[in-house]
Length: 255
Image (cartoon, rainbow, N blue to C red; front, side, top):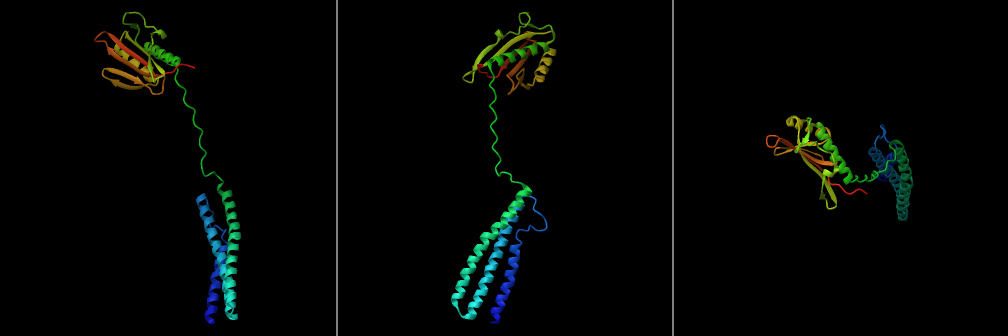
């Protein structure tokens, strides 16, 4: 008898403590959670603790009915007590835990907001416009004018005539299956070919072209500008001329 009373008393004390923990499960402790992860951990902890309290209540009921059944020598009381306490535990857990968790969720939403878990998919950027043949031709002529303007005057061609900036001088070569590449080559004589070479390369660099060099040939290039490649070779010691080449990127016919 004394053993039964001790067991029941100890169970009541433990279950009362668990019940109080479960009732206070929506408390977040001394420090309020500040991040979404901390709030999720608090919600999980509250659900587990309140479930433990609910099960403690069911265990108290089971003990009381089991003791009563033992005193009355009724086995059926014990069976009924177990069934009733199980139903009680399920009811308390399903109703009370849901309310406590919803309370914490509302507090968490108020604290950290309700940001979507998946970032919106950015809209695809529009495809870059294709370079047209007219634009390529115009840019080649612009760079030709820039080149002549940077050279030391007077500037002439190999036959002594002044250089012309004329679209009719450009040659078109097929590229990319459906495109055309505009190109221009010429030889220039200047008042000072060495100084002209330095000035022309500086003008090309100022226009945004990157430097490169092949054998006895200075090159400037770009992967984004309409003119793709410019090259110049100083053959003053051979024929007294600067040999110039300008080539556009692959272009398509305008719409």
